[in-house]
Length: 77
Image (cartoon, rainbow, N blue to C red; front, top):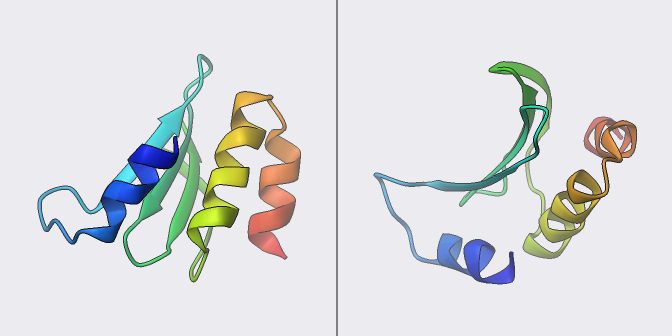
């Protein structure tokens, strides 16, 4: 996960984000700019701009543990 986030440090117009998904089609998409989009089945649930790489890593860990409500809470705070 850290390696995927580190790739965002090098701008890439073709691939400006890294993402993690689970088996239920929930996705956390992290962009070079710090934008994070949380979605399910292609529908955006919530987003937040200015998220640090460290916070993004924590969000991905929450998704791994199935803590979707906590992700929503953090992104909507």
